Image (cartoon, rainbow, N blue to C red; front, top):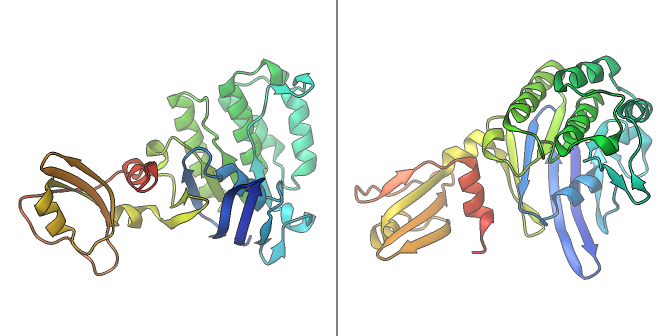
Length: 290
């Protein structure tokens, strides 16, 4: 196992810069949550990290080896992307069983017994054709491919799309179990933040084509506060701190702060100070333009 290191990743589509000099190190043995708004470049970054998409500038290395066109490095990586029931040529008539056969050839550590077990847990018939699957079932096949690949670094892009709350709980349980058993590294990109917050050891917020923060989830939430009260009192309490997402209603005001080391809020009984959930913190930092 090793680290996956991105340096200076730039990606442009015509005149649009999607990724603007991304530096990111994915350390072995952790579960990461990659969070960002639609169109911020999450899937683009993940596809560049796994050499499915070339960057305009920058490098990606796994354990010191370039990943681009390097089978030795790519054998350690799995990017399980969402399956499509339709292809450019019409319905995807491939059977799930055939899809697994291809995966078993592509991923050197493929675990067929584990794949069968996961499919059984999800209640999916391998004889079914991809074109006949619901969105939820397509997600289940994607999850199974990712987990059964046994790749050292496994990336799951929006894996819970289309899954109901019970299936989502099942997925997170499977993910935690596999991580505990294998020590593999997982990156999960998702819009459904709150229920996954406890699963992510570290979170990565992507904003404006770059990494806004990458931090231990517990430590990050420990630094976050939402301060509300009369505007003058809130300003007094948060003076000198970096403030996000200020909201004003008449004389009242609400503001989110991230405390740096050695910083604290000034004592004031007139204001209310509350902790934030990961979702609320994400909205405050990335949800609206400053």
